[in-house]
Every structure is written in C-alpha cells, then in structure tokens.
Length: 239
Image (cartoon, rainbow, N blue to C red; front, side, top):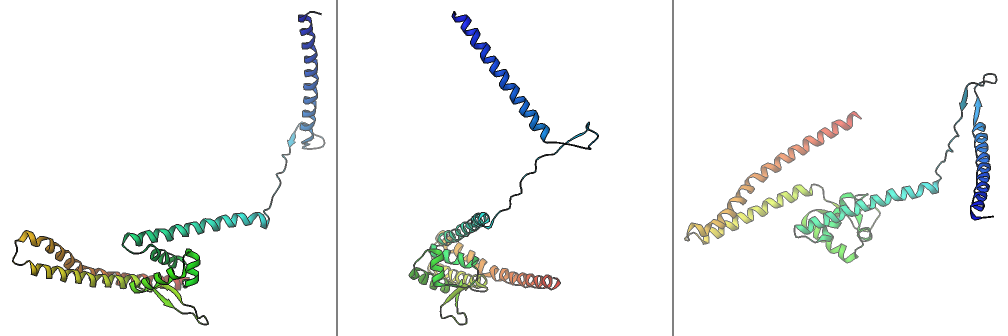
C-alpha cells in the first residue's frame, strides 16, 4: 500500500470515529434537554414549558459570618488609628508633642469617654511614663481633666467640658500680653526714625485688633451655642 492510499485509509477511519462520537453526543444532549421539559397539560403536547433548575439557597453559618464581622471591625480600627495619627500630626504642627495629639485624638472618639492610663497605654502602644507626662501636659493646657469613677481607685481622663472656649479666652490673654510687649518696644524706640518702629507698630496693631474683636466673636459663639442646645432640647422633646 503506497503512502497516498494509507493516508486515505486513515482519514476514513478517523471520519467514521468522529461521526460515531458526534452522534452519541447529540443523542445524549437531546435526552438531557427532553428530561428538563414538562408538559403544560397531559393532553396538549404542543405547548412546552421549560422548568429552570432551582438555585440552591445557601445560608451563612456563624463561622462564615465571623470573617465578615472581623473585616468590618478591622476597617473601623484602621480608620480610628488614622484619625488619631492625624490629630497627632496637627498637634506637632503647632509645636506640641505628637503623643499629646494622639492621646487627645483617642479621647475625642473613645467609648466610654473616660479612659484610664493603662488603657491609653494599651491603645496607643505607649509606655505608662509617656502617658503620664502627656496627660499632665494636656491638663496644664486645659484640654483634658482627671476624673475618678465610683468604686475605682484608678485615675481616668476625659475631654474637659468647654475646653475650646477656655482656650480661646486664654488666647485672648496671650494676645493682650503680646500687644503690651509691642508697646514696650515702641517706647524703647520712641526717639528713632519711623521706619525702625514699623515692625513693632505692626505687631501692636494686629494684636490690638484681635484683642478687641475676639471677645465679640466669643460672645457670638456663646449665643449660638445656647440657641443650638435649645433647638436640640426641643427636637428631643418631640421624639
């Protein structure tokens, strides 16, 4: 048998096998399709209704729900950590220790609002000595206060009520001190040419302006705060 005849013989054998395989596949496919059909009525076979396979209803077990809850908890903890660090950086920008901002940042969002030294050290991953030094600084600034809880001998810390109002009042006193200091400097240069006095005049004028205007702004804030509290009380009474 030459090569051409052998090639034709092999092609015919392969074709017969392919046709047989295709025939078997088509028969099985038709049988499976017919098995999924239900007759609309036992007598009318012209209307066929295809019943789609029902999707299995899978309920999450407590073990499957736990990773989702852990993921949400982890996300919340990361957001809290970012907020704490942002407050720390803000404190650092105004010349205060970053740890002071971190302690203050946590006390702004902590639950409960009172936090012990040991809990602050655990949350912020800081030493108890660092927490002690930082809380003393924040107390001196007037941002937090030390409190005690009934039946507990430990010291707790919380944001001091009206801390920002008190800090604005302290700021006004600092402005007054700078204005007086500038006036003393101008008194020293009273016999010098005006260009030499310009630096101190600007220092005096800006602090005199703030010393005059900030108390008025503070009074406006107090009035707005009272109105806001009254509005909240009225809204709560309606609920």
